[in-house]
Image (cartoon, rainbow, N blue to C red; front, side, top):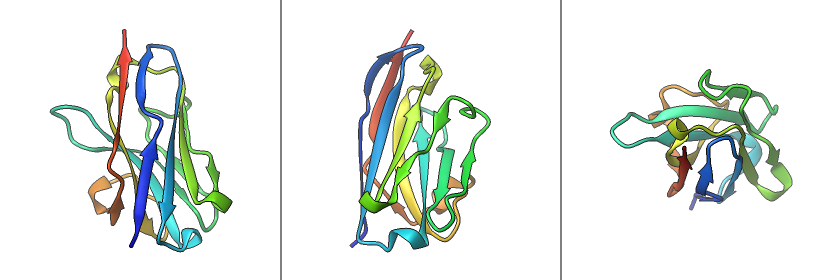
Length: 124
């Protein structure tokens, strides 16, 4: 059974940083891509970043490029989302998701496996 478990969400002031973690189990990590997706109230899911475990290639959405990064520790089956210079509009539930092959940002709903999500709230 594939399981993805996110952690690290919380409340942070604008301009601050958070690091989310996603631990994956039940899959052959090097054959999968891990993506980070968020959903704000009343908005559609937005693909933010992905990493392809096979070659380490990464993608970033324009909305987070230069502020968010996707480091990983493949030995621990863990992918992170390092979020810097946070803005109130970054407030959302953040999910990690897995899919065989290479990562992608759109459409985020195409990811096969999803974690339960973690809330990030950025205060102004």
